[in-house]
Image: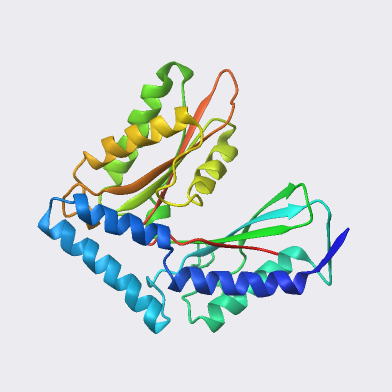
Length: 279
């Protein structure tokens, strides 16, 4: 059994949220450059160039890519041969979030739902814990902005709608979202499972590197078709029209009840922020 101090988790979480909010991933930057090559709209090209320049300034000056530095979403894959010592795991993660948002000069966005009083430190974090084989701990930090999250939905479709019905729902959700989620977006889609499970796998789909192909040929074909249909909507960068409404569509699918067909669409804005580290 390998012992790991929870203080190490605090240190990693702190660093991941600062890094994610300042340094846009190479995969996302590559997708923005690739979009520039195919974008036909002059204003669409101009906006894509500005997004790339914005990412460069954030990195060079060590400031956040966007004023909305998000709620702190943390995915943990905890090896079953790890023994955590020195404290409570949840508190260690929350302490990492506190330190990261304070030390990185990041906006705290967590508040009471009705009074709107800010919690002051962007906690509690939204923590998703999964036990896995081995003696490692994989920590993934995904700051989630409000604008794109507000456009996300879960729906329970009837099984009779089939694959085409699912595709129509996903495309319609993006169409209705318009410019609100700050396109070009990344679309995470969850198909199957229960109500809450569908939403979770849709969010996990956003953690996949942008531009990577789904290893399942069936899902890869669905993703390609959805990306084409979404970009045919003509919403374009920031909603000003053009070919680039989405940089990627990522689909996760799991078995579901014979009477159900749940679908979740979790939309991510152009600041597709996530970072990971393995302890």
